[in-house]
Length: 331
Ligand code: ATP
Ligand code: MG
Image (cartoon, rainbow, N blue to C red; front, side):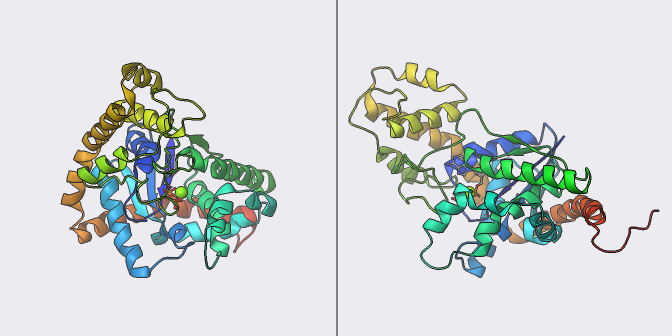
């Protein structure tokens, strides 16, 4: 069973990324052959500074290794190092429906918040994402809830390819965590916690200082009630319940039961303490790993080499099936 997922190297990743994706990635190493990718080619679809991107690659790489990715048990690499992703993206564009791309909510959200250029790359993002996964013929894609639509699209792309050109690709399944698939911004609990679109006070970073984390939870937006229960009109409290359930490895019902009658103040305090404790070992390992950039680079390069071996194999089949390039000489 092959697992593939990617994360944007936007530097400090947040608690939503951690609970929604990273925890699943670490567990995936024991469930199958896992490939995990820092998607720098995706990160360039919104305004960015080239030197900052390189720094952010190391920040994100160190965060993931600190969280428990083990280069001996998974293939961990940088997307831009494996040219097959970009080539496959173009080939797959011919079996991607333009109309489907116009329905992608991530594009609509991100395009709406751009003040300057809305790049064609932002529109094409899901095609490159399809190529990321399909290049490895992965069976499973562990992601947060917001990426479900993109995985649906890549399934359609793979199916259309297989129908049109023959069964060269695997149609992948999405894997979304039961609790914490959509962690919300602490200040705007109607929006997901986000790297590029979140509020500074509402976004808790994996490697953030404990004091700052406590402050953010203390000022989390709630409602005028007092009961620690989930409800449609209690988005803030519902989010905090989910966070605590995910961190404790329990259910939201158990969290509600254990804070029955305790009020919001004590509850927020408990969530803050639990998150600080949960992230402390990751932060500690991050601080040890981050300074050694040549070691991080070595890990990513070694990962890219292994990834390339798999992806180039897929490309031979895809090019052959599509009639691109000369007929393959059988060996
Ligand atoms: P951006 O907002 O710029 O897209 P991001 O915060 O979504 O950034 P990504 O690198 O795009 O970060 O996402 C990495 C993984 O984290 C994806 O699997 C995504 O589904 C998951 N994820 C992102 N935000 C959340 C969230 N708020 N709750 C749960 N999972 C999330
Ligand atoms: Mg995202």
